[in-house]
Image (tube, rainbow, N blue to C red; front, side):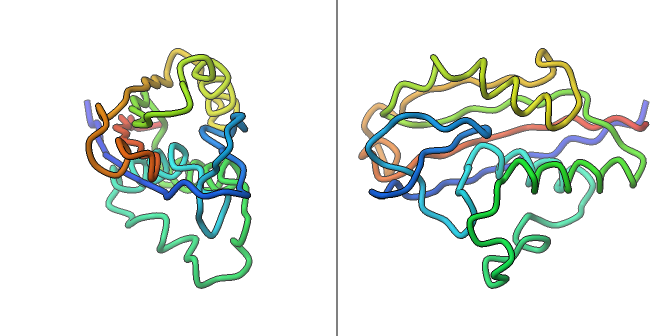
Length: 159
């Protein structure tokens, strides 16, 4: 069977006066993620993994921060566009496995909502979308609460 695996990584700085959006879910917190779009680091890592699996570059190629049309963009809309691209190339999602790295806020209470939003956008079953949350044990930029990072692996199968 022909399978493709892609990995993705993204990190965004935490700043005041921005919403914290992960996996399409707004999470209550005094800080949000800074970026040109909604800065949804989880969704960005998933898109990069999907594109990487087919050697199609990264999200900066398709949604460059220099293009004003993507300012404040909903990352789930961008995810849908990437999903349509991989489907047009003859591929479908087997599964997604992601790790979110943040000291605060606690993300585990929001994982089911994130899985549901992502699965709905990608038209897959929620059990095809794995999300785990961990801390960085106070080490590095995520440990110092300067940002939130996401690591993702995506398995693609032929349609």
